[in-house]
Length: 362
Ligand code: F6P
Image (tube, rainbow, N blue to C red; front, top):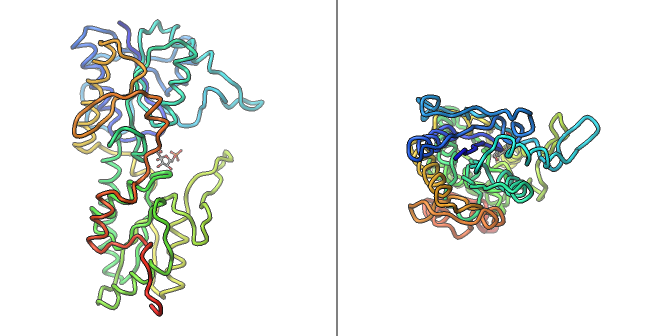
C-alpha cells in the first residue's frame, strides 16, 4: 500500500504531530509506504510529483514542533489556478498527480475549503480520500475540535494575560483583535480563559452603547482598566464588513480592533490601545491537547484506510474519535451557537458581549 499525505490551507500548530502519527501507524503498524506531498496540491502538479518518502526516522522529533514539514498553501485553487493570463483550471493535472505517484489512497489534512477541494479532486480523479480536520478557526461541521484551535486559544489567552498587566499600569482600555475568520470561537474561549471584560463575536451583534456602558460600570466600581477581545470578523459600528485588500487584491479581515478602540476612546474618554495578534496564533509548539488530537486523528485515519472506508473525515465527538462523510462536514459551517454553554459561562461571569440592553440615561 502506498499512502499519500498532504497538509493544505493555512498552517497551524499540530500539523507535524499528525504527520508523525500517520507515518507511525502506516509504516510501523501496517508495513505501508507513506509519501508526503509538498505544498498541498501544488506538489501534485510537478512532474515528477514533488513528494518525499516519510519514514519513522524522518518524522522523529517533530511532535512538538510548529508549522508543517510538508509545507502548505491557502492560495492555489486547482479549479482556478493563478496563471500569467488569469485563472486556469489545472484540476485534471493535479488529479493525475495522484496516479503518477501510484498512490492507493490519500490522507488530506485541511479546513473546510481544502477538504471540499480535495473531495472534488477525488471525485474527478478517482482517488481514495480520507480527511483530517485542522483549523484554528474551529468552524468545521460535525467535529467539536479541529487541530490547531487549542494552541491558538492558548496564545490568545496569554496575550490577554499580558495585556491585563500593562492595562492596569496605565489605566487603559486594551483591545485585542484575534483571528477566527467568520466564527468567534477563539475570541470566546480566550476571552473567558483570560478574564476579558468584553468579548465581541460575529454571532452576537453588539452596540457600542452596551460596550461603553460595561466599561463605565467598571470605572464606577473603581476598576481603572478593561480588556476587550474582538474577533476579526465582527462588523463595524454601522454593520459594515471590515476588510482590506492585500497586495494580490484579495480581501482580508483586519481593522475592526482599531475601529472599536477609536469609538471607545471618543465615547468614554478612555485611553485605548490595540493589539492585533495575527499569525502568532498559528505558529509555535502545539499544546498537549492539539498533540493528543493530532495523534488520535492520525492513527484513526490510517485505520480507516486499512478498513477500506473512504470519503470520510475523522472527527471529535463526545471525547472520542469518530468518522463522518467529508461532504457533510464541509457543508455544515460551525459558528458559535449563541446558546453555547461557554456563552452562558461568560455571561455568568459578568463578561459583556455588547448585546445587553442599556438602561435609559446610562
Ligand atoms: O483560517 C485560518 C486563518 O488564520 C484565519 O483565522 C485568518 O482569517 C486567515 O487564516 C488568515 O489567512 P492568511 O494566512 O492567508 O493571512
